[in-house]
Length: 345
Image (cartoon, rainbow, N blue to C red; front, side, top):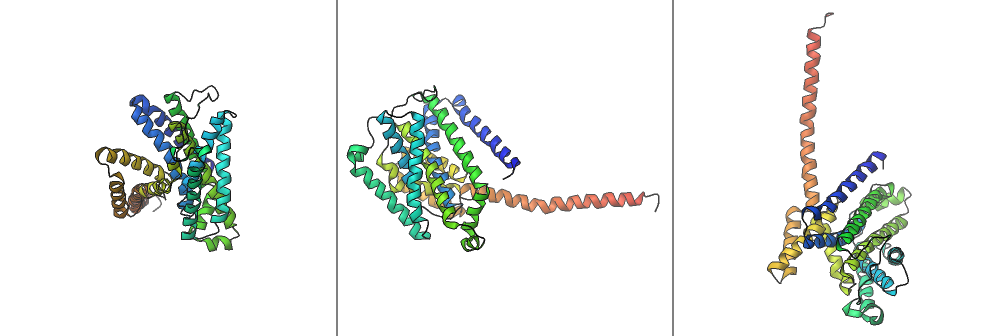
């Protein structure tokens, strides 16, 4: 990745952060602020999963394991009162990365459906541990007692406005880092593995190591989303580790798109919007959400962001020959004009 690309991505990240921080100033609504925090948490879950699904070709049905692991680890560490917020944050990510390393070392050796269902099996195992280890996790009631929010470098995370800023900064930093990963040589190695694994092996790529690293990175970023949600809800709940949470992440990718980098984030925004709107008008939100997603995906045959990008790229490609022909015609006319007035002719 060149310096120009890095600078462009950095500028886009700064602009995105300014927009996010400016939204509450223009629309001072607590509901809107809470909605964006939900998008931040689930957006990190979806975009981290897309590192596996869209870039590596590994469809994981159990990615919410690391989302829940980050939430529970952070909550338990903060409730212990023995570590600082920063230490709890770092240790929770490391714990999730370790889980991803162990699970990934077993799963990435498998192909397609076996990989998908084994990741789901590990997630449901973690879900069972949460339900049965009541003395530690609170069982089906979740991690009760609240999560303390001591100041972090003098920042009061207990203030809703400050926590919103903290969540947005964290989100933009994580997305920017993930963007650098996908645009690095390692990211293009993952694309090669996705498109033709045999060719990658022939070229000397250690496919197992590359897949495992992608698995660990994806799990680590997903855990950050879990930490944000745990802080926001002041608790962690078994639903974070249930299979439906991973299903929602897959729906976000399907709805937003997997080939455009921000597609999963678009999907997260749309799914959260649909959740809020459908819940207002009906109790059968799952049924209506499923129908809407099926219509969108089957109608467009790709995610919305992918569809928009492909339409834009198609129009740009269609205009290119016309622009080239016009430029060639202008050059030819200028040449004829020079020839007509050439004093040596």
